[in-house]
Length: 292
Image (cartoon, rainbow, N blue to C red; front, side, top):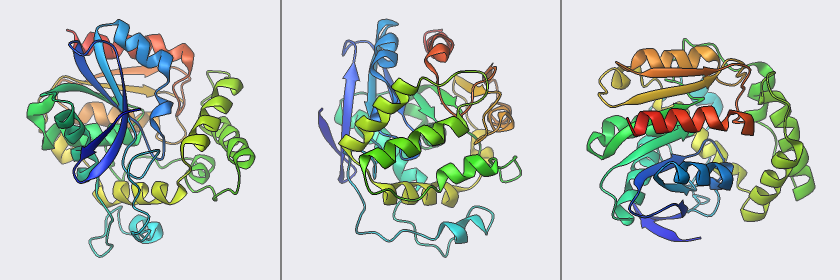
């Protein structure tokens, strides 16, 4: 896969579709590598008229790691209303947002449609006000405003975020299967083979647990985005599952309510994952917003 020099770091990326089609940047979530945007999903978007770009966020996959940086205390960040200026962060959500726009710069793309899942939703929200001129539309999937008054994750889902490090591929895959059993929601039977293959590929590409903690620190350090979201004037879509134990349905609704004119699609029974059965709904939502 190609690489780009962005904001002083290296970003690993991949593309689908014609270079002259509508640019669409896919931004993945916490610790999730670009392979979580599965090839068939990306090809389906390309077939709808998009030049699709997926990439590894910093500190994840094959993009630059920040292994020399300290891992901030997540307990301190969580104990102080999700923000604490006294905690030194290796990087911020602003940096993650700037990376995505920097990748567009490296590819010679002036503006694009932005689609983010989970933490990726937080990143594209941040792009919306930091780089409004670069944004054609925003789709925020299974994400949140970061408002601390929203319902917290279930204890079981929270344990997935703070699962211990593992020593080998078999243990990693086993833990991934257990984690997805927790967060998948009640409306869809998990595709065990799909999840196993994706987990195996993630391990083979790069296992970087400390990067997950540093990304989590960036999330907690940003806090609520509601004030900035209220000032956005960009085509905006929220897609959320009704059975998400990590970021509840209220988190998705709060995001839609925060942005003037935003649309929302609630997918019955979907948890914190995008099962293959939901892809037509998600892809149609993205395309209808972007190509309107």
